[in-house]
Image 1 (cartoon, rainbow, N blue to C red):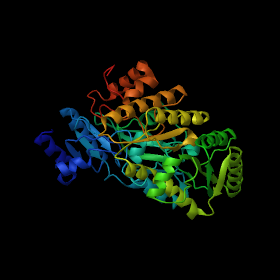
Image 2 (tube, rainbow, N blue to C red):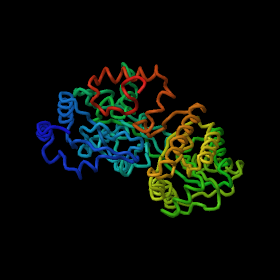
Image 3 (cartoon, rainbow, N blue to C red):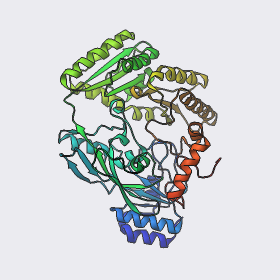
Image 4 (tube, one colour):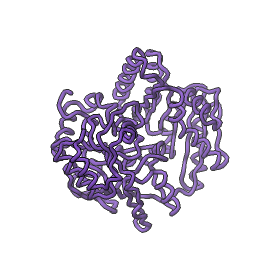
Length: 463
């Protein structure tokens, strides 16, 4: 609980109409897209970098946690205020400051909605590839903080691959700028890469300059259907092995297609065990050549049928179905665990088999989908957190999934971040030496542990 004096100081900084302390307001900022929740003490919605700097300095003086928050779509519990404190809601900082046609860059404030930004740059014939599934609600600032990915990651990479410059409020209230509009920048430590994916623990991002690319001339979508999920997974690895890098390469099992069709029918097949949804982009000539080759590879992997979308409207319908997967999952179960294990692309068939084995072992419903072109699997556990016995099996199954991913040379997260959900697994990937190095960075820039405490790892060894 913050004091009335602190609340009054926050109102002086941000304006009384932008400081919220009523229970119904706090509840709205107590959760994200996970099953976790905790109430903050206060929510503040600043408008400027200077206001954020003042708020952080006040928080340091009073030892109050500060949790930056974008669209609240985080899938790792990264914005849950477990220790109370100040939720810093960045939705008022929502301006696209510049689209620079000469340098192919754009500069934005953190609260810009990702899909709105896509539309703005595409009107100019330009392209910003990162496309998290939550892009209709997520913000660019949140994307940078979590290093978000999306289906296009297989060809274009994740958010950090497009960040050229940042303005950041430090954990003690300082303001610094790193990078800019230059494509090459090798001066000093790579602080942009440090902030991108830092999950709000090292700084509050207040301005972002990103790299844009020309809008592809053409794109086409293909849906390949398979009698077995193993054949579908094998086709994913085979496409990459043949040195074709599609824009997107999504694997879906029967269960997830069934849920999507009951939620938002788009024509996914109901009589196959697996399918892959593929988009290729580029020049008209290259797109047609690649789509023919992909169809040929799928046939060699025993696809039952390959359907090429006849036009962009049909393609958009198929992708709308894929994008509705999270809604379909949430409608089908009281509690959904959306996992994010990622493996080398050649190991996709292996991790698919392991997830199926784990589902059988623990008698759980685990629909499989994922951006498998980049090895990013999203096994989703449908459960009910009120069932204590089932939750024990869920916990054991998740442990085994991440153990399997790491054993295959993978990682804990391809795009969702660590947050609270995967904090316990960090020693498995980095060991105590790696975690100690991260703690030393956090301690040196945030001596009072003000910014988003308890996320990614705990500050004390062994906790």
